[in-house]
Structure formats: C-alpha cells, structure tokens
Image 1 (cartoon, rainbow, N blue to C red):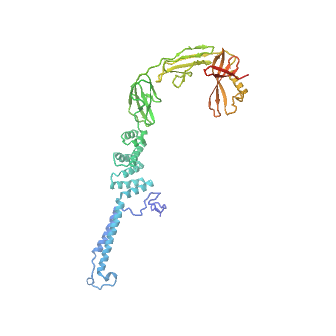
Image 2: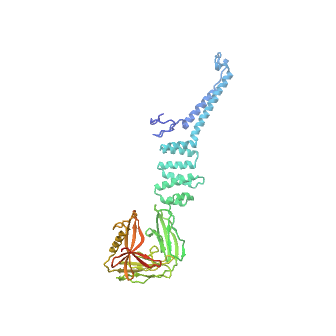
Image 3: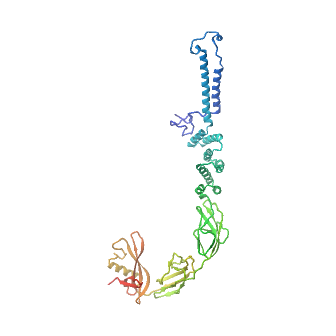
Length: 480
C-alpha cells in the first residue's frame, strides 16, 4: 500500500506513513459533516420505505403482475419493514462507530502517540486537545501534552500546565516524578535555577528532593553543636552537594570574599562566632548559619631543650626534658610540630652540618604549647668522610658474599642495598659513623632493613652495630 500523500510504500499493518506522518485511515475518523450526511441519508431511506403506500390490484387499475413481491401483499409489507429496520440498525451502528472515534479519549491519546512517534508533535498536540475537551484535568493527558508542548518550544505553556499538577494528591508516583522531571528540565534549559531551588524547598517528597538536591543550596552543617568545650575542636563544615562554603570566625556577615572552607577549622582556647553559607555550582546561595563556641583548654608549657643553638665540633646529643603531661614532638624540615611529627623519646645525636629543630609539647586534647627552635652547625674533623665510610661497608659486604657489586646488587634475591648516614656515636672513647641500611626491591619500593653499621671515624674500619638486652651498643667487625 502506498501513502496517498507522498507515495512512499507503507508496510502492512502500519497506521501512518513514517516519511510524512500522514495517518492511514483503515476505519475513517469521521468529521461532523460526514457523520450528519450518513445519518441523514439512512434516515431518509428508511422514511421513504415506511411512507410509500402499498397499492392493491383494484387501486392500481391493472392486474397484479406475477412475481415474488406481488404474490402475497402481507408478505411484501413485512419484507419492506424488515429492510427499513435493517437500514435503521445500520445507521445506528455507523453512528456508534463515528461517535466512538469522535468521542473516545483512549482513541485520541493513541492517535497522538502515533503522531509523536514520527515527530509530528503539532498533530499529536491537537489530538490531546480533543481528549482534554472530553476529559478535562486528566493528569496522564496533561503530562503527555506538556511534553509535546516542550517539543514545540511552547515551554511556558508546558510549565503552566504542569505546575497545578504538583498540588494534586491523586497522582501516581510515576506521574509525580514525571511532572517534577519535566518542570526541572525546562527550568534548567532556561537557567532558572532559583525557581528550581524554590520548587524543591517546597517539595514534600523526600525522594524527589534527594534526586535533584544538586540544584539546592542548603545551609552548611557543623560537625559540632554550638556550646562550650574543654578540648580543641576541629570543626568540619559540610554541604549537601558540590559548591563552596564561605565562613567567618569573628561574628561578621560572610560574603563571597570571606574565607573558603577547605579543611577542618582549628578552634583552640578562646571564643568563636562561626558564620557560614553555601553557594552551589548553579550560583544558588543558602541561608547563613551561625554557631558560637567557647573553647576552654589548658595550654601545655613549652618544652625545655637542654642544648643551646650554636656551632659544635664534637658529637653531641640534643636532649629535651620530658613534660609533666603531654608528649614532645619535633621536626627538622622547618614545619610546625604536630602529632604526626616525630615523637621525642631519647636524646638525639646531632646531625653533621647545619640543622634546625622545632620542638613542641602537645597535650592529649591536642593542644600545642609554644614552639621552641634550636639551630646547630656540627663540623667533625676526620680524614674519613661519610662517603668513605659507606664505601668501606659495601666492600666488606661484597667480600662476605652479601652483595654482588658496588651498586649494592643483592645476592640470592631481586633488589639492591644502599646505605645512609644516621649519626656519630662514641664507644670506648672512639667515635663511629652510624649508617642505616636500606633495601630497594625490583619494583622500586625502598625501606629500612633494620640493620645498622658503625664505621670508625679515624681508621674507616666497618662494623655491624648491635644492641644487647640492656640497650648497650656492641660491634661485630666486618673485616679480619
């Protein structure tokens, strides 16, 4: 079968042309004029049959002809009435078909969907207009029609049709989800983000709010409630979605020029008025949230470092007195000590060259004391350098078949050894370079092996450095 409009071949069973969208009417979709014409014609036929007089032989003035219809006048009358009745029934049936297709909501909706499949949204919209005339306020039809309006770029008309549906209590979950989805999609296309935010703030359905929370700007949440605390507070601020939190600590009104929250806010002794607001990725600004904090903690005394800063020419230990409470932590890279820094437990051998130590006492409440700094310059005069000491250890381990070559290649396993200066110690009135041993596997992972070596600073003799059960140092010579 070919389309009467464009001539394109239409597969059997199709009700419309996929090329031009023209409907193929297997059963005619009657217009009022045609309907009236059919009914009027059938009615006229019936009336003529019923009103036409049946003449007897004497009235006709001639003899009755032979034939089926003229043999029995009574039978003839019955036959004519039967035909009239059939005509009336046919008219009623045709009228019923016409009225069904004209006034069936389901038929109009299905025809609209057929037109939409071929992107003929104009005709699809007309069909739904007719369906809405028959059944005003039908949510399913209104949702479908708003979608066609959006396709026809009638976005405002679509919104006007959808917004009243939000207030209805008789929507199914799928219908309600579809209403919100269409409204938010149109608002997003029009960059009306403030209206999306208001829509969701007023939405009583948690599932929908959760689905579209990225459009909302809720006030930031604080990890601590407002109040008094006897320990340091690491205050965390969080938001419901992607964006930025701006805050102040002095009670002033925050703006987009205020500090941006990046990490927990450290609140130690003192009074803080924390004000904050959130701006999401669409530029929607939340309300300002305010919390007051009164932090009352005891600050530890600063550490007591026995050694003063200065220049040194003999190995010296850096000693710190242990505090009454808290622990001592130190750094050598210039950073401020924290609980993640190295904990001081025993006197520290002074490193060769220039060094700077920072010490602080940190309490159990994570309150830090004042930081104490010491700088040292240690020059040790010896013909044996650290480099020579390392070389002597490597050669001794080659002779003992521990390593293969001067590059430290291990024997018996994949990887290599290396050595680094640790400190200078004194044993039996003799000084030794202490070296740490490291092992690097074939994947490049490097770690301390736990072994220590001691090289005499004047002769360069290499030794293994060991500790007995009492913590006393001992030496195992590596050369004969």
